[in-house]
Length: 72
Image (cartoon, rainbow, N blue to C red):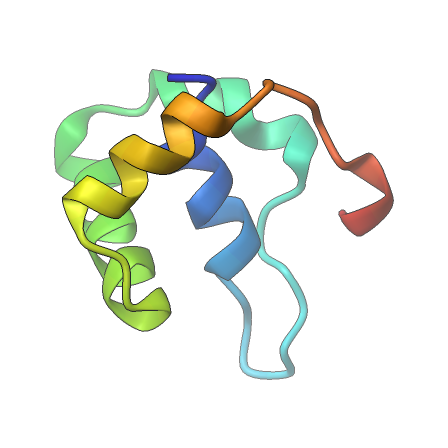
């Protein structure tokens, strides 16, 4: 699924000042996290962005797997 769920966490997780907590370079490591760590972050990111599970699946289908390192 082109790591779409991990990408959503990277794009959404921010500190109190609005700075990203993760970089796109962190996607592979996030993917290695256990479900007990990653799933709560994914669930919150989905909720904050108003995405359903179906939306995430649709994004994954449309993803071409590119990294936007300019946004990190």
